[in-house]
Image 1 (tube, rainbow, N blue to C red):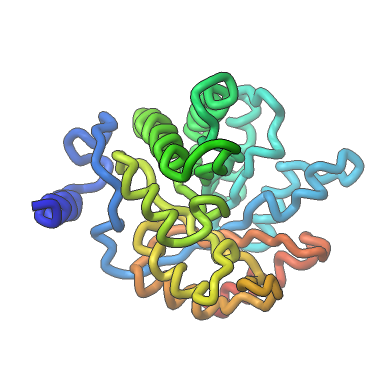
Image 2: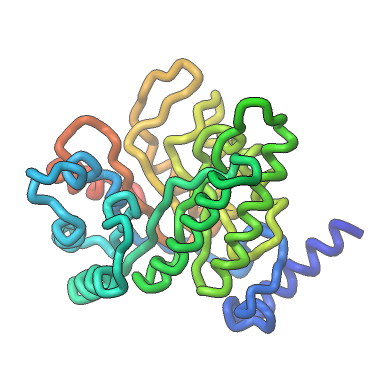
Length: 302
């Protein structure tokens, strides 16, 4: 009966026109499942502002989010990911609309944003702060025109069991996903350590969240098993956003170049349609290195 129920949901989703489906715009809950209705792959390139993190945090660099958007346009990208860490503490609507307008005039979509939330906290002030942070950024993302926010599950706290932590994370994601649906913004849970350090752990959370407004942010550099690419293949069918790092590392922590072609093959097999976002984390000057790696991505996706 359970398998039949899941099949019926997939059939219903495939037969509707996505956001226009009855009840979906109202935020009605449907458990997260592999994304249906994608008959072929299509890739658009973007760059994460996190790649410019040192420059954006240095008041003497002369680099701002405006500069970053300009650089994305110079690289002939399709989008720009405006990571939340580099915004004012309380961005005004005017500020958000200004960034949106700048990107639009330069032919860029705001591919998404990201926040550093943690839903592993037990009930109390810290947890309330994390819920409030996520909801405020859902509102900001809607103003930016960002369709998706990269979010984290968080980490297991001292004294908490794995089962308790799982329930806390699922409950937090359930609450904010329902809120996101009311604002037309998707949340993409990233494989980012803790309970999401493995494909199994990530999908256990995603499958227990009762909202179609939650999916996966596939990060090519955040699995560290002997089967990195195999784990990426497991989560690719759920991906709302794809994040590409220039290196991967296994259990030995030795960094090796990412096999970009293999990542694109995985995304193609999953019929992924969306942004592929370069996130440069290495030591070189990102304004020099990012254009080079964007060219490598273009070659790999050709």
